[in-house]
Structure formats: C-alpha cells, structure tokens
Image: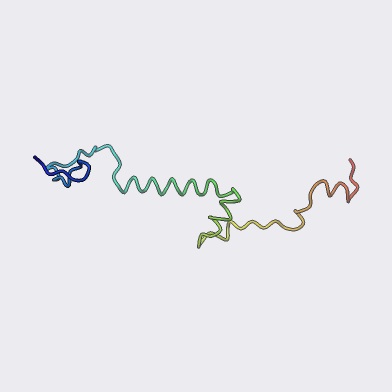
Length: 91
C-alpha cells in the first residue's frame, strides 16, 4: 500500500523516463514571445490616438513620449456657435 498525503493526494511522484511530445509544427518559445511583443506593440500604437491611452501610456515612454503630446492652439479653441454669434455671420 502506497503512502497517502493529506486528503488522499500522493506526497510525491517520480518523473517519467520519457519526454513529453513536442510537435514540430508548434511555435518555439522565442517565436511565441516574438509574436507576443509584435502583437502588443501593434495594439499599443493602434490605440495611441485614444486620449486616455495617449496621456496615461504613450506620453510616459522615454524616447517617443514627446511625440504624443497634443496641444491645441488657443485660436482653435473657439466653437462654431461662438463665431456665429460674435461675428454676426448669419448666412
């Protein structure tokens, strides 16, 4: 009779003498990691124009962070309705 651990779980088991099957068609560790890095980079730059992503993530990157700073000039901050009322353009 084998020695049983707590709640009937075996305390230890010996590794089998054979290696687990590894498909020759599956990705290796480096290939899967490369796909992950490329995918994450794509998603990050795809959503870079979303304001929350731009301010919270992209502007804090060390080298390219200044590229994602968007400053609107004061002349562009005027609404169309304000221009119509102040200027008197009722056309």
